Amino acid sequence: MAERQAATIGERIGMVRRHFSLQQDAFGQKIGMSGNRISELENNKGGAGAGVLVAICREFPVSHEWMLTGKGPMLKPDGGTVDSGSELSRRVGELERQVRLVIRGRDDEGHSLLKVPLFSSAVAAGMPGLASCDVEDTMEIPSAWSHGRKNLFAVRVQGESMLDAGIMPGDRLLVEATQTARDLQIVIASVNGELTVKKLNIARDGAVMLEPQNSAFEPIAITPEMDFRILGVVLAALRQY
Image (cartoon, rainbow, N blue to C red; front, side, top):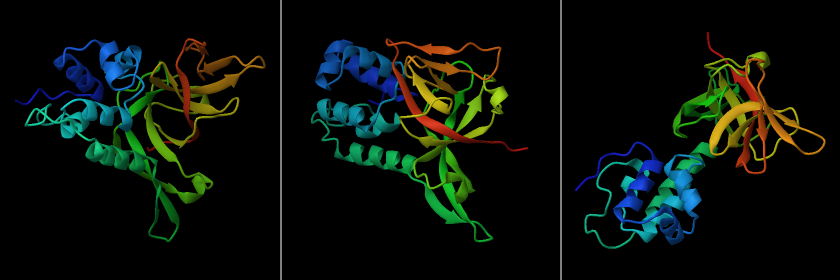
């Protein structure tokens, strides 16, 4: 019997756990994660990578097609054998490869172009928030804009906290995927599993602040208790009229 289609991977993880009547701690133990991390995943915080989905399909008789897309029955038709995870691993790995890949091309005048993956969900230039990491389309840019960087992607902006930096709602940001950044660079950061674009401020004592570029917004002080990660450095803001 087909289950209702779950909109997010987090919802599907929760449905699998509840179907097998497991608490988050017990479910996490089976796939090598903590109960707190399972809670984050079910609430769509932090993102579930290929390893998480493969582990679930390996431990439980769950259809990798349903786990990946939400379509079809949750359980395998025979209800028995667990998935080796090879097919799911291949498909998710291919998606991750495509997201990282910068495809080279040329425009009509022979100039070198890059096609950069554009994520469908907006990154908040205000309060942190990102609902999904689905790739919507690709965006072509002159190859010279990359300065030889390879791991590029683009995201749309919502909110007005970066107006004084020239970043407007609806702009598309060209981002280099990296886990490190220098003081005063504009970054895409994850704060407790949610994403935001802000200017990075690193004090002499090592304290980190994410600063808006609009006096109507408050900075975000990063504390040791927070799950804070830098995901990319903003290279350019692109706008269409």
